[in-house]
Length: 515
Ligand SMILES: Cc1cc2nc3c(=O)[nH]c(=O)nc-3n(C[C@H](O)[C@H](O)[C@H](O)COP(=O)(O)OP(=O)(O)OC[C@H]3O[C@@H](n4cnc5c(N)ncnc54)[C@H](O)[C@@H]3O)c2cc1C
Image 1 (tube, helix red, strand yellow):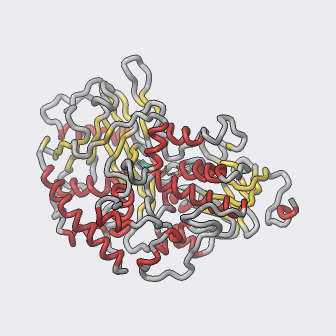
Image 2 (cartoon, rainbow, N blue to C red):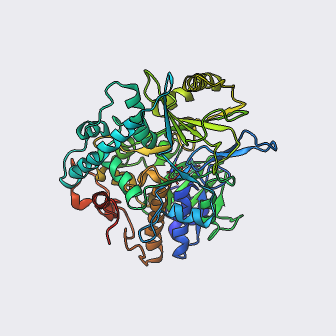
Image 3 (cartoon, helix red, strand yellow):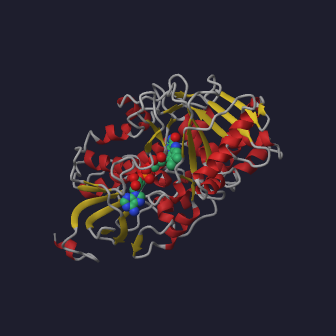
């Protein structure tokens, strides 16, 4: 191919391909699937780890009565938003059903509340928060449709009549209703885009969550999807390969890996997390343009940490899925506990886990397991003052922020962001394309966000390669980008070109899809 020789950095020993897909998470696999569907089969998937799945990551933990370990999910765990018989369905849910995934209904109403004195019922505060939520959504809708300035979710709560008022229990409820999803505080989060992601996930699909306890791993659904077009030992899968350099131009992309190997591609799709892109793991040549660098710096990467404990008995209540703890002074200090030792989940496993996010995640990532274990156990003993709480027989948590292939858990939109600004995160630079949960305007932070964005990038490139544009919604070829940003994004710009093909406020207004 003579065009290859014209490229910068062309090296005759590089492996050649039409599309280099960088990363084998949801977006990477789905991009490959979209290419395959348009008969573009000459692609490579380059992946740091030894298998596909990315942030759907599991590990062995504890042991069952036969001495075999359980499998628990360190990363994504829920199918968030499912679908209705007549409405659109979350693709993650479609594949989860195909894979016969064991994923019981996750009932957020099944919650018991605690503070430092033990069980104290403040579920009425959850009701109060939920009452304010409708007003909160309406205000977000007004800002979006009237092209007004965005505000923080915190300010939005105030406006809707909810305040935490320096009250530990109100703070715990606020954490449960916001931080537990966003992995960042309401002060850090955009009101408008927090609401759009929520609406499109829960009102467009369905307002329910299923929690995978499948002992094959949650990522079985993605493996099911992958097996429809990839062989088990497909030579297009390059595992245990760490990308260090990406050299892009208007004619192609050269990818260099840590082991010295390289790939010459006509196009590349980079699906690395926002955290990876923010932490200079990969060197881009030429340097990324300033509109791209600014967008990478603008959006934030949250951290969500599940801390697992196994005991030799289940000494906590078995009639609730969730336990909410209000620490007297520190908001977000070991607030949400979940029991796996209940019917439908992993009965008899004696496993509990507690979740922290953001600053508390960074804090515990920086300290040793024993220190964290002591803190966690002190809280648990406060919650259950009348129970003789034993020490755990197993204890473990991941450190997502320090992880070189993620640098955090999932993205969040800070206050004052616009759709145009986000489009710059999505947009390609020459032949280098981007996809992943963070590039999704509609569903950032979610698996299905990564799914749709991988598909979009795959379809756009397939359209260029085959000269046959089958992507009716988004189109084919390059994404738009904005070298000069407007203060706000006009209502008419909320369209597929800017990554928002579905109307977030349409779903919010009706609460469900209209015929
Ligand atoms: C703790 C946690 C909880 C979550 N909970 C949920 C949930 O319940 N529901 C939900 O819908 N979503 C959840 N998510 C979000 C969900 O996991 C992500 O949105 C989704 O998995 C992202 O897919 P992706 O393809 O965009 O990125 P990734 O899965 O990160 O895929 C990118 C791939 O690139 C690889 N890579 C990175 N750097 C390099 C390199 N230098 N060289 C080669 N390969 C590299 C990585 O190994 C990875 O496999 C959670 C995430 C975390 C971390």
